Length: 68
Image (cartoon, rainbow, N blue to C red; front, side, top):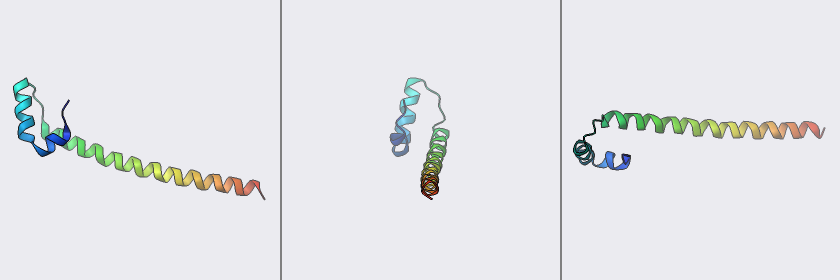
């Protein structure tokens, strides 16, 4: 497993380690994909927050309609 924090701070060391193990991997592409993953995690977090707000409002509206 590649430590992405180490990859970001010391890419040359990680490249050397991968070469020493005979592993051929595009580390730049790996970082690009990790950045993309982080963006999607942010989007997902925002969508979950919005979902909670909407369901809370729906619950409040439902309870208010039952008390009338």
